[in-house]
Image (tube, rainbow, N blue to C red; front, side):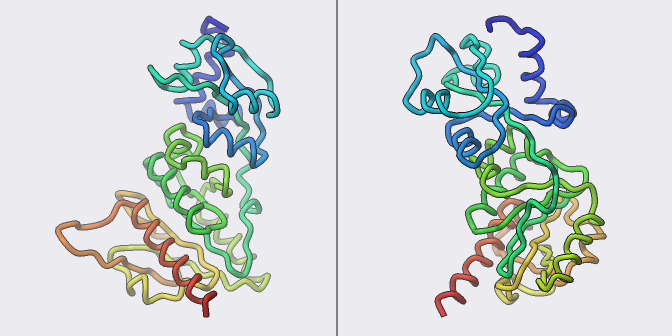
Length: 270
């Protein structure tokens, strides 16, 4: 393919048009690690796009030989546009299906740790939180309200592939999540909701985070909605010093996730 035909225009729209991603149920994956994880974790690969005039690396040749999905040959220029790079054009770009936004995809066991991000405005922050959640052993990420899209290319890149490692589910409002929480509690899992806020009633290291826990992270500017503040069982703060007035949402989430992981490792060590 050397022209920007209708098929290419659809792929291009997936980069910047959220409505098109939702309508078609697909998004663009760029980069060796994210694409490799999408394949290895069994995500539905709809198409693999490559430059037939470029000698493939061992990695690219293996993906092209073994991964599912249709193959489409593109010129280097068009592949570069979908890879969003003027230089260092990617060897492969994938079109991947978006999974269902079903809370049942998030497994809740006795040691559950999860993150809820309420109305994030930045795809980069959302991707960073998904990355931290994966790194510190969380079982999933829930995104509520009118929010940044986890399938935005900026979010996918910021997650460095972790989007494919743990379930990320978009939910319209707190109502659906709270019903899910109550169902888990009714099933015998004492799931606690722990909100983060600079005016929290306790320091994060003074709260028991070894119990089944869903961490609530608020919008970067407005914080948590009133509904989530009311639903929280505890609200914790991260002590800070210096001239900083607050922490970036992704940084705050990472710190609380680390503290939860630290407490759980300490308990396991006896």
